[in-house]
Image (cartoon, rainbow, N blue to C red; front, side, top):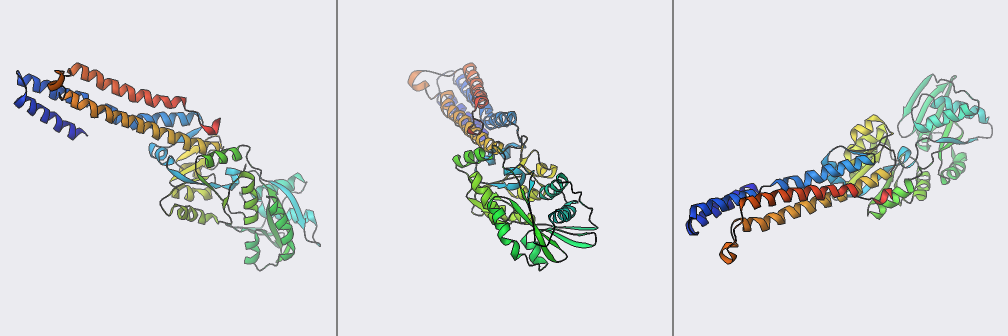
Length: 399
């Protein structure tokens, strides 16, 4: 833009100097300077930054912290939003609901061993079993050996007994026959609960189940995202039946279930194939690679520091409404920036010919450098005023 204006200014000077009326030099200098003044690119240079600053500030008012302008711009182009289940759609504070032992197993013994196996684990589901056991007056025993198997469960030794707590994949891994528990597990999963097998000394001992309640505003936030034209996908390590039960409650149609923590980033990458912009929302350590892989990563502010550091946008309230709001404000911001850019370029497209003296041969009008300076300042004021309109933006997600 600047080189073009410089060339126009030089051409204006030469035309007036060679073909203009007397005093030709005075006319040439005035018109050339007027072109430079009226085309000062303040408005063009301010259009996008002013809108971005206003948009980031407005988002912060609602607890949505946007790391940079690039994240705000990319968020306006998102077509798919991937939501982690635990701690994102749900509260992430599951509670023990069921203890189903095999016929020859004491329920309290089953729960005490399961809680002891999960005691060293930091997983929310494991802690729910531990807390549930304590609530029933059973103090979990510290295991002698402990190994957490990502995406499977835990393997421990308690009081000389080998105890396994996890999903069906963990049972298969150790060739444990858990067929007698399948019907109970399917029933629990159909209720939206997470059921975990417990095996003792190579034999299936029973099932413990926990339920993680859905956040109060998750349904509304997901509905708003869908109204914005976004495809909402739920990503979880839970089995298919449990995942589908939760998805039905919140209105999500596409579910990616039984995804191992290390495969989450790969699933996000697959969704990006075809050029669509994909956002990822998560709160845990194992979500961090997927947050980085996504075009825009959204971290739940109540989650881990690793997830927050990996994300582009942080939702301080922990509510999914923040995701919908971030996308709404990003679209409004980019629309506002385009308005300002369009206005700035229209102003220059009309102002430069007038400043060059195109009206003089027909009407005898020549623009004064003083008026050109005022017009240039007015264009900058217009851009700032338009950006400030974002302060009054009303989003569907917070209605």
